[in-house]
Image (tube, rainbow, N blue to C red; front, side, top):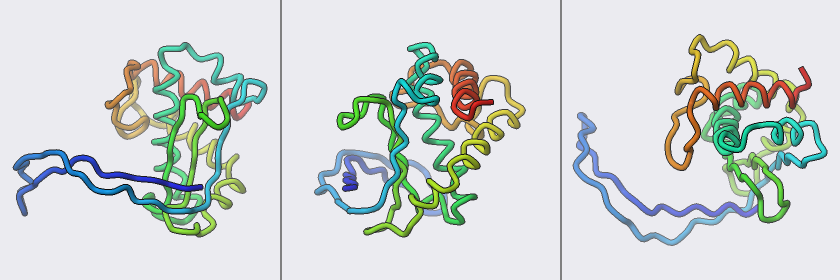
Length: 174
């Protein structure tokens, strides 16, 4: 796949204290990289797609976003890499496939085989994602289990954790 990133803002921090000194717009050209990727599609006829379709509309965006967070932070344990070695991009409706999906890609030009390893260990990774959610002692979701909530995520945190747990259970088949 072709991964394109572009920095649009900057933040000035004071050395040693990390005090915020300001921020602003920055205009840099996009960086492009060809790499290897795995696409997790959620078509309506698949087990994952059926579990996703059963979710309330108001939490679907939060579930996909939180799934991406979990994959980025749990998968490196199985892939024997750093979380900075893989990238994750979530799509509520991918323009190429027309269904919700999750791209998991190597963050190195040409790829290093992490996407292929992810495919081989998918069942174990999905099980670990579900265990991460159920083992967290929080009731409503916290930055440790479902990640920080913000940006475009308008779903309520407690609904997101419960919905994500149910989605993963439906996908795994448990």
